[in-house]
Length: 198
Image (cartoon, rainbow, N blue to C red; front, side, top):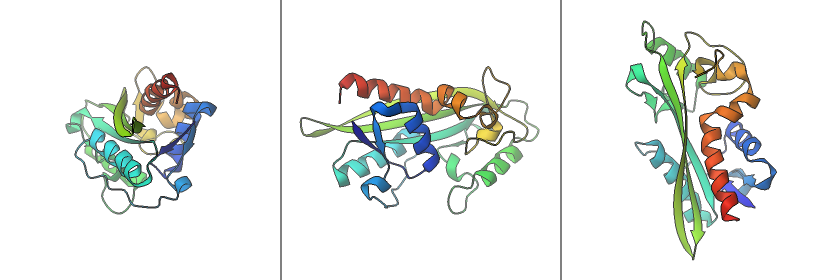
């Protein structure tokens, strides 16, 4: 079974492939020769994920899923949320700048509770018509006072998941891929795909 994951983020792609295993072959945008800059202008994670999946489905006619992930910090009223990847502004996704800004914003704040949320939008074809589904995964945790650990990507060095004392970046991919927000969303996606017997 083959399905397109609307991303060219090598970290996300590797993580998803590890989680899904060999039963589902996941293709990237590059694998289908899509090099477009797909817009992500929706005000919600759900909207962005659906926008990306629908773009690929409409243009290439292939079943596709896309994700959008946000870090929601309670003391910052849910920020950076949908703007997590470009929180510090500027071109591209600068993880170091994003973490610096977030740690600066959190200075002096006692409430450090936060969560990661991933929403996956899947568009498939049934009876010749596109059908959309969404799957959500979330993990509660807290923002650390400093960066710790070298694995992972994004905000992993400053996010400590609940029931753990180490950051995602310290725990490493093997543990992270079992407990993360993305792992939980992908598990729901995989359960659906395998049950549908695509």
